[in-house]
Length: 151
Image 1 (cartoon, rainbow, N blue to C red):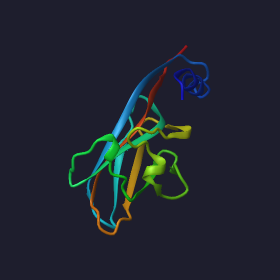
Image 2 (cartoon, one colour):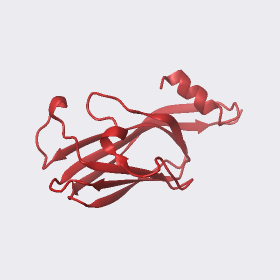
Image 3 (tube, one colour):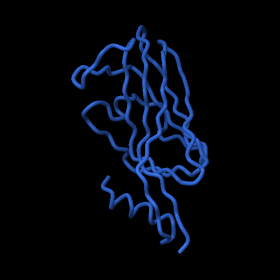
């Protein structure tokens, strides 16, 4: 999404008030996600701003093996993200992380940006459906922090 589009999108929700829009990312790390295991981690959104999520990025490895963009691990992992403020899931059920998050050199944007209210949390849940691999995975939620000011 282009910045002008993102700015127009944010502006619709703040009644024409002046906005400070700052690019931002939140990161969670899952270490040693064992076969058939499920693990959750929480992202705490800043108290003084809303967060508009535009995409997720992920990077996985197996036992810290060296990687390049051309030989990155494609983990057998599903992801489910839930916004605690609205109690809404980003998808109907957990989806394969490679089809939902940007991996390596191809981008996957969310079909529509999601606004997460300040002081909310995002719960990121990963489920390993591999029969034998243990993964280390970083998940990054990217977007912008939005602060609205009085006219």
